[in-house]
Image (cartoon, rainbow, N blue to C red; front, side, top):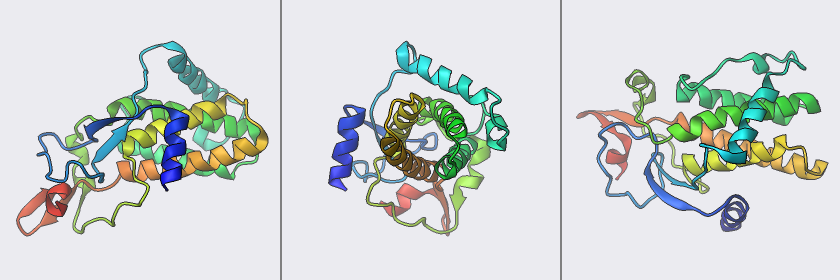
Length: 215
């Protein structure tokens, strides 16, 4: 797993550390603050405010709306006001269909939609969770332990967005495209699962932040 981390870090940029990811507003800092968990993250900063990267994402989003296909996922609406949990589910669906499709045009369109969805999610990952989503992110039992490869939602989003951007460029050999598509989908599924994971747990003493219980 160390080699995978090294490869991804070298491929996608320098890494800087940040704090909480989608933590509830007013949440206390855990005594486990140095440990990666469901609500902490490691991230590589990316510039969404201008330059070629932004232009590429806009092109990808436009490409994804061209009616060259009739697949229902190409007409699924989403925007900056869409709940982050819904955007995460869209990412899962785009990735699942992307890896199963043999149609180059559909794959390109799906990759464009995925990139657009990830670009909407990326700048919101440190925002407080909206009150109307708290109940759906509250559980009665502690979630399973995090996997060994757990860089945090911000870095996962960066990896996924960079791969989606790379794949929409259509500058790869077929074998490279196939391998990177598989990696993209695995990262997207991991990222989406982390975004939709519970943040609170119901206990005998009331509802508590999961990190308080596991610390």
